[in-house]
Length: 158
Image (cartoon, rainbow, N blue to C red):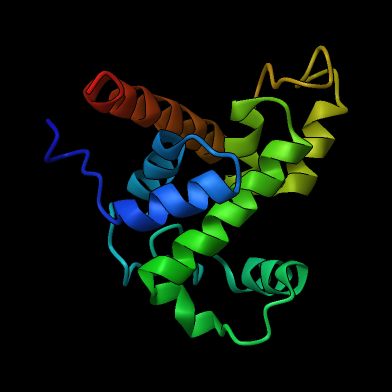
């Protein structure tokens, strides 16, 4: 089972998870779900690398970080991709109190999640999502949760 849920790139995951206040197993779950640990992964919409960073998102993170040296092609680098992906997850964790909202925002964008949280049809308390209206995003959140629980069960007691 551990072969299916590896701890690849652990130096980078642990460094950037720690810098951004993230649970490393959450980062592993995102990488496993997004790319299955393939640094050269490229989605049909152009997202790149381990954590599948879109170019528009890359540009925004680069601006927020004040990073003038990194280029979008660097998202194929394990370290740079994990650095940028963890920065984004950390940002989303500070914005949203709920892990499902963080995962949904990583997949569907902050604007969508904020809109859903402000709509009683999708959120009864404005902090948690009772229903995710995009089925792909709902499935993504379920996959992240399942994968995170698997990582925790395999590695957290070791």
